[in-house]
Length: 433
Length: 131
Image (cartoon, rainbow over all chains, first blue to last red):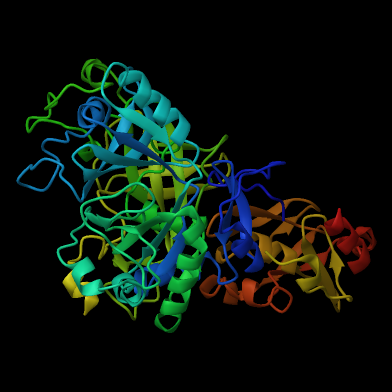
């Protein structure tokens, strides 16, 4: 067996990779480690990526996400700076009523270069009217802080890169709130009206108007967000409090099926949930014709934006014709994304490249339709390959394309959505049981 | 990831540089992957097996193993004819993770049994893994 593996999520070992504060714990647990964003991170633990993926669908999993970076943006000019740089319109981004971003709410968007290509995707948290936290991907704290500082020149705003100074972890899965309740002070009050993409509390010197504390008194910022498509939370604490929080949650969830999950499960969960991996599914090409146009501030007629932002003129003038499309296969077989693999039409014409190709282990097909174990607990899912392709033409859901590495060929179906019965938006009251 | 001292090795097997094992059973040979290989791959989700009756040269690709994160090609350690494939792997590819030595992948009738001598003993394989 030869290692012809093209695992884009994890590269070769570096001489001096960065380590998160949970690195020692990962190694003690015998995790299979790999490099991701210059951090030595767990790909999976001894439980295996499949068990970890399934735990998040049926129970809960915790993820070390402290390799991700945060940037604080403060001052009278903070909001207008973010409104200039973020793709999403902060004045109309909340709910169907198109309300403005306000304290305790967060929003997903992308930061673009002037030419309309992607620097990174981000979640922007409004803690106070003049205090924001921007959470970006591993290694992007510096570049995003520099980008914001450049456009903030002359504005009353202070931008600070908090890379490696924020303790962040996620708990995801249907039992996340029930387990989290055991480690929170006054969980009932904390969970009250904690809608999807809202948060409470604060940590370090980032404070909102609400306070949330763990049972040991540790201040925490608790956000109803995640990167799995499932119900759950992202938690932020001072970096020296992350290991105690991690261990408290593991103990609290032990009898509920909670397990630690690595990057492989995170990748397969997010792909099945049609969420992009920055610098892989979005990146150095215009942010157009992809499944994530909700991250832009399009007007209803989709011909203009509701505001001016960095990169917007280039997008409006762009003649970019390629399309980023989600797909799912008919069995677990994959073609590795990477050099040498490509996409053809069913008649063999070369039409594009594979951006992501992984296996969502919670799903399978019944009479052609995708079924998840979330909706059918007795369903013996074998898994389906899924991900994203970048092709030179539009395509409708249900149409087929072929993935190939030059030797093996796999026919897959273009999809509007992939894993059914996702819980991310489920009301918190329902999930508390 | 398992440390070297946690990995299971079988003294009676012969190993290849591609982390496959070979064992003699009468006139035929069974081929599987080592504990090191299954540990590195992680959860195996699909095994693509050759047709019984097909013949391959030594070193030729005869199938693929897919884990959650990887697609790995399988190469024949000794040239010959495929006389059997482990059908159980079609429904339960995870058997390889559970016991990579009990759960063989293919059985071959070797064209030249002498090629067995070119494979590694368990000591040589362990030395290779130690680097």
